[in-house]
Length: 199
Image (cartoon, rainbow, N blue to C red):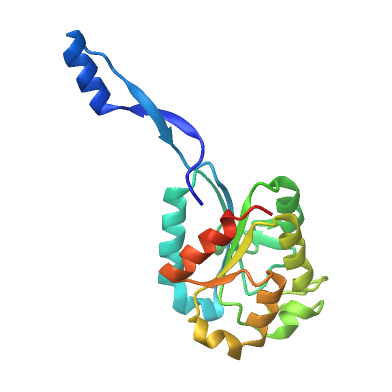
């Protein structure tokens, strides 16, 4: 993903050159590249993700400072009918996932960050969620998301060498069309390439 869209910024070299040449202050500008890429970021919180908090917070902080159009939401283990923006108010201030699907256009790039480690029931069957009764299976919600935003990616903070030991990691990787990368420099470079492809 490269920066897209233009704004003006001060061109110091041309300003100095033209000011000296003309004998008066002659301010020159040039197009400034700004990141106009739109990102939906879904962050898994709690449980087995607790050990990855520092890495995920660092990623989130970098994303917030890099992308003007960043919308973030939290979930636990698997996506269901509701997500939240403030973890301390996760039960009182939820956003309907259907509303997010309706609100944000297909021009958004959709990124999930999570270890994809849970009971298979949480993905595969209605009522499988470990914190509430979900009427629809988690995979249904994940498929809705990947169908809506063709530019999607799952970033996994668990070292890649352990992924094959987790059945649910394999399920989510398949739902995400194998677009799963580790939370490493190399993984993020690969993820950037994946998200830059035209679908």
